[in-house]
Image (tube, rainbow, N blue to C red; front, side, top):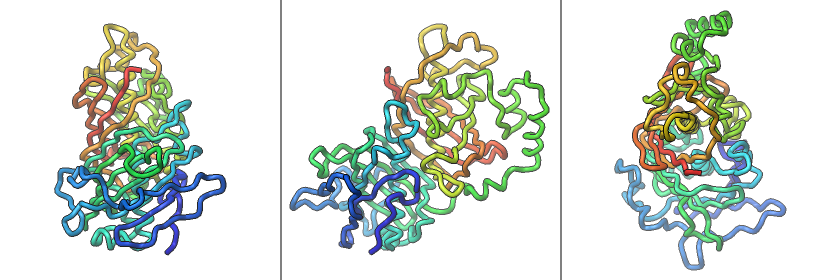
Length: 407
C-alpha cells in the first residue's frame, strides 16, 4: 500500500497526514515521523475503536437525507490524524502576530484525505462509486459547514469521514486532539459537502472567457482621465481592475496580510451590502498549477464581509453600526464620515447552500458581493456571490456566517 503525499491536492499547505485508517479493515497508513517530531499519539484508548464517532454524529448534518452506504452512519468510514505544522505556509498573513488556521482550510484537509483514499483505491469502494479518482474529489457544493473552534499552529487534528454516498456527498467532522493525545477533543468543524467535477465553470474554462468587449473595456481604462471615479467606472466597464480610491485600501480594513489577503479593492458599499474585487495570488499556499480550490471563493466572500463591517465602524456620526444596519450609501457622498479604524480579527463560523467551481484560476480578477441577511450580537449572516470580473459569469453563491468579537 503506497503512502499518500503529506500535502495531498494542496501541495503548498504543508499539512502532514500522519495516520489514515478505514472501516474496511485495511492496515493503518503511518508514514515515518520526521526527525525531531514528537511521537504519534494513539487515535483511541485501549479497547476503544477509533472508528466510532460520537452519537450526535449519527444525524445527517446537511438536512438533506444523505446517508452512508447501507443506510448507517453509526461508524466512521475513515479516520485521519493530521498535523498542522507550526511552519505551515497556510498561516502566512493569517494573521500577523496571531496565526490561526483559516476556517476554509478545513475543506482543504478534507480534500487531502479524500485524495489519499482515492489514491489508495478505497474511495470508490467506500462511496459506492462517484469518487473513484482524485480529480473527482474537488468540493463543488457545501451543504453545511460549521466552524466551532480555532486551530493553531502545531495542533493535531482527527478528521473523520462519517458517510459518503454515490452522488459524492461527504459528511465529516474535524476534532482537535485532546491534551492526552487520544480522541474526544473539541469538535473544530463539521459539515456536509458534495464532491465532483461538474457544476460551475472550471478554471480552464474561465481562462477563455475574456470576451472582446471586456478586452475593449480594459484597454479603454488605460486612456480615461484619472479623475473618473473608479466605482462609477466599474459599473460601466465590468472586469476593470481600477482601484476604488474613494474607499480605504483593503489593507486598512482587514487584519490579513499577503498572501492570505484576497480582497484587492472596495467598489461600492451601502445598506444593501458591499461589492469588491479580489484575486487568488500565485503564492497562496493552496494554489498550484495555475489554479486554486474553488472553495477559496468563500474566503474572499468572508473578507468582503469583514471589509464591510470595518467600513460600517468607520462612520464617525452616531454609534458604530453593524453591517446589517447598513454602510454609507456610497463613498463619494459620505466620505467625510469615513474615519480610520483598526482592523479587527473576525471569524468565518458557518457556510450553507454554497455552490462552487471545482477550481479558480490564479490571478484572475473576481467580483464579490456580500449582502447582509441578518445579525444577532457579534454574529452576522450574508448572502454572497462571486463572479468573474471580466465576463460577469457567476462562479460561486451561498450563505456565510461570521463572528466579530468586541475586541
